[in-house]
Image (cartoon, rainbow, N blue to C red; front, side):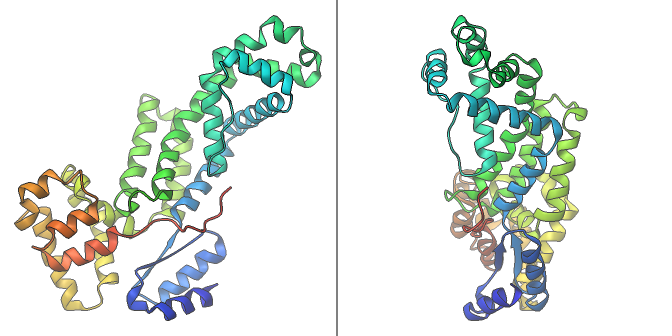
Length: 335
């Protein structure tokens, strides 16, 4: 795999390559690391969508979540495999469905849990009605198991738990896997926001989400995070000027200087890029223009830099390189 990636970079020209994105399987990881060793002026980046898929897969292995997903799939399968029962369900739900396919297995699972949660009362009414108790399905062993699941408080409580955990992470997945905007300026903040949302949804009760955060943090540190993500966050005016702590964050600033050294080959140009950083951080020159200030949260980050970065031309070129990058490989496997 390394030889294949290296040959591709050679054909394109190393000077034209900023990053190479692959899946996060072990063979690709090794190839990516070898590529970075041989070619020190580009980045190998694991596909963010694939990393999130793997993160969700790890969360889905937690016993209470795994059990609830299995019960939800069993409930849906039982209903949808019996046309008469499906018609009964539709009468109770007002023709609303429980199933809708999505891009990934975990997105589909989330939608399934969300639909079940929305129809909780209607499903409980159905499984306590004479329509159900008089039906042939209520007398089947499998039907009795399904009926018990629907009336089980712990099933519904864990669905709510799953929605609180999976919802924010799937929003990050939609961001990195979408085509509406280049996500490099957003992914770092999106992961922070997802964690903040989870904390708020449990009212700060750490015991509720500690196990989830262990998985998220481990995945972020080991599989996911690259300096480009932090640099995209730093260079996104929507976040930078709203959060003064960004330029005092040692990790973010370290990643910024790492990227400048890696992506800018000429030492003299490296120094020029660094010298211009203060113009951006202090909103001097065109960065302080009324239009620049007004459009910090409106224009896409790369567009904003193209319009207002001329006071710092070296930093402008560097910023646009980073902010126009994607985070995911279009060929990533879908679960």
